[in-house]
Length: 506
Figure 1 (cartoon, rainbow, N blue to C red):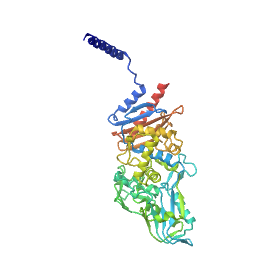
Figure 2: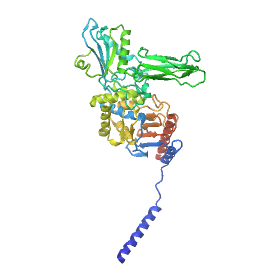
Figure 3: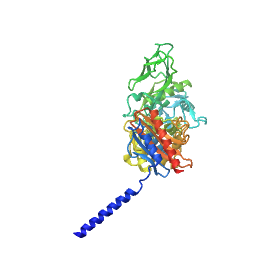
Figure 4: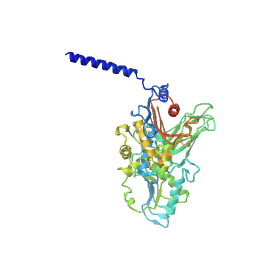
């Protein structure tokens, strides 16, 4: 018994000495940069928002983190996934073929049958610049550039008259063109335009509006292209000088009936918006018909569309009149990352599904790109949940650690050309054009933006002075301010954190 008591006393003395030794040791110092960054994240009005942050060096060592393994709504940061998958799986030079078939013989320049345009997901029949250098030859195209080239190819194939219908066949993709998780009001606008195997002008019509000639007169509204393919009821009026513009446009769901409501003050400078068209496959051949007729090609039949894969299946084994190649994937990825174009992201997702999965569908594209994240990059399957390719749908979730993992993978990948070329650079053309000016990171941030209601995100690279990158993902959910204010706080946080780290190194 005495021996046991002695052991207990010795153990107690040892424990007290150990506690004393631990107390006597100085606590690890809080790094100034981390402490300063924490104070910025905790400052009002963002102190009650949810922050997800991970910043690492080029080796993957964490430099700063807050909730890096929590799931966040990423907004358009989700586009990094489909852009990376397209770059690696399809490759920079992959193209899409739009084929033109005749259902009858061509005799003396007359097609004795229908002209069928079979699309395979080329989104580039649109007006934009497809590279950072807008002065480069072929970098920028008009709304009609590629439609005119296709029409010229049809004429070059010997077609001078079509004794039948002009049909847009979009059956290469699934018949569902509108994502079920997209908001009903959003479906009117370009950022939620239907996703189809054929598309023209981002599957939208340009609406330019402004004041009328006098107060109470109808607002001035015009459309481009003006193909006469929908009805329009102008209920919008011109308001007195100084009032707020509240004009809005609506469409009966799925119809071609559009109307305007609200008003425009007489001193307003006007604006152009982009209204989604419900049947892009039909819209495409309506634009093609107008172009062919301008070139003197007569068409006796109607203009129609289909998504029935059986209707023209027999034609796919025949020789097409025309095979028209798209711009390469590197040009398709550019607007997805540089200006956050939703339709291109969703189209590439379905295209990936058609190439590596079962079908050109959202479900197949999501499955293929999820396997890419898990199998190729090594991202935990529980670190993301995706509904679409652009980040527009409710229910998209991902962790900052998963995004940083993707960024590190792509930075080192030999097939990263399209991905790296598309990312906006601070102060240059794209969604970072006006950000980080006058700061220590001016021109050094290369990253993807993201913004939806109460969500802001920025993920990418900071180019180091020694050419070694810093990788980061910063996401804020449930913030109570404007998107601009949230983005400014993200920028301030990144500048202060990275600058502080550099100062500590020196």
